Amino acid sequence: MDLKPYLGPTLAALFICAASPVLAQAVPAATQGNFPLSVGAGISAFNPGIDQGHLLGGTMWIDYTLPHMPHILQGIGLEAEGRDLNYFRSGSLPSGVREDTALGGVIYSLPRYRDFRPYAKFMMGYGNADEENVQYHVKWTDSRTVTSMGGGLDYRVHGHIWVRVDYEYQSWPDFFKRYPADKDGPRLKPQGFTVGAMYHFSHRH
Image (cartoon, rainbow, N blue to C red; front, side, top):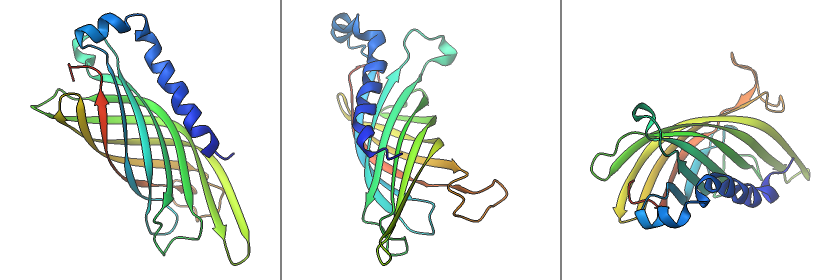
């Protein structure tokens, strides 16, 4: 299944689902500066897990911090993320390599220290990878359930504007059985960094 046509609608649907619990209080929340939603976008550089090399692409994410949580759980929230890695592939990679993911899960932000705020996250979703042999005019595509874990650091630049540096490690199990099995079985293990900016609707972040 090719995920590329569905990344935009998926993110839009996840945005609506994340925002729906607070829509009824949108006006007072905005007045109080307590709308616990942020939207961001950035550039990602990943080792796609196919041979050695790197792919670049774009990433979008939406974070919703759960309100009214017990003190021990304050900072926990939900994240939806879409990524398309399709540009500036290194020469060591097969032709036409492309990876797309649509993920959702839990993010936990530690208490803010001055303008810095570290976080950790765990997500699950779907990934799609393409590879093309230009010489033989052959192209294959495969999709998998993906698990992802990572973390990073948010830094407030000014007002509602923050920048994010993010690391993510993914696991694509039993991937097409094209790659030699290791002790965990055949799988892709993409990993990489994202640098981007986001807008927090809440003053409290």
